Image 1 (tube, rainbow, N blue to C red):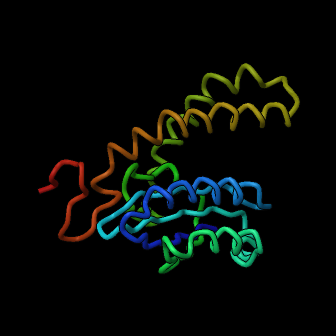
Image 2: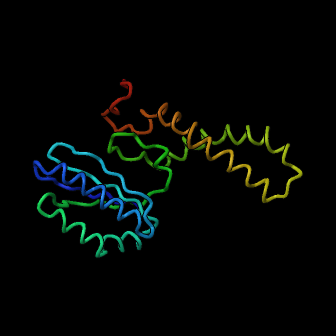
Image 3: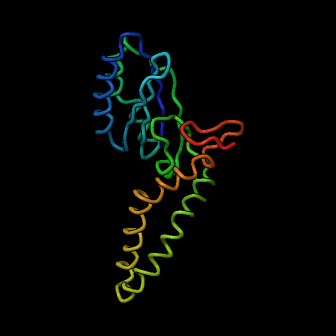
Length: 186
């Protein structure tokens, strides 16, 4: 579960607000179910965005309604105002398709699935060819553990970042536009 909170910071209050973000982030990270908080720095008009990731809706709601959060909000009333929020359920694959430094939405799920297949299939063949014959005599639970132990780190750290960069124009194409930082498709 992901929620994006938008904050409008009064001119001159950025330094105090950024100090506040560090404190509330530490507080949120200690809260049950928190999977991380990221801050996107100002856009035009002194707007900040907090991206909060939680294990489920119930725990997110508990944080949003918590006395701890209310106390942190009281500290910043004269400097910033929360002006909106957007909640999304995510598949978990979005991190493989993130565009650093942007607020571009993740591609459609069918594109993420197809891209992940393109990355995973060759690795699966390679693992089956090189690793599976060497582990054939191992107990099934141990053999089964080898596959994700090899596949997932290679996908996460090597294949998917490169593949999503290579396919960026296709993944993030909005009709009539181009993705900033990529080659012009046309």
